[in-house]
Length: 114
Image (cartoon, rainbow, N blue to C red; front, side):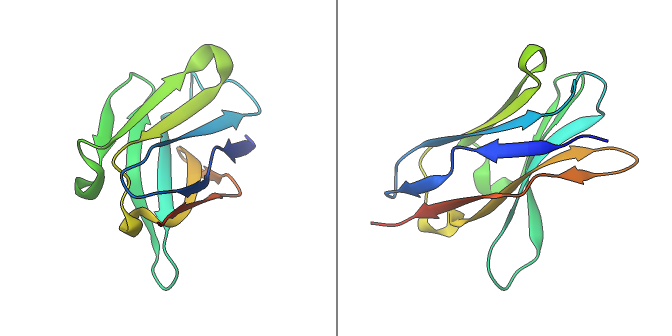
């Protein structure tokens, strides 16, 4: 089992940047993959970005070239650097540990608005 705590959300203007952090309660070195998902009101949760234990990454088409996922195993932390933010990026962002059992953080609100 692992507990995940997200931070770094907030209000930002269109075109701005935010960096989300997700800190795990134990080592993430052996976790198959860590990911960021988001939920927009009225829609289901959708994948934003994924990073495997080997460092491979996968991005949703709508964030390619704008968002970057990374991990620091020594700090048990996964990051999501979000640049060129758009109003459509407004959502609750969730961190997840992906494996035979998925574990989720509580979510952090990101609002992109002028």
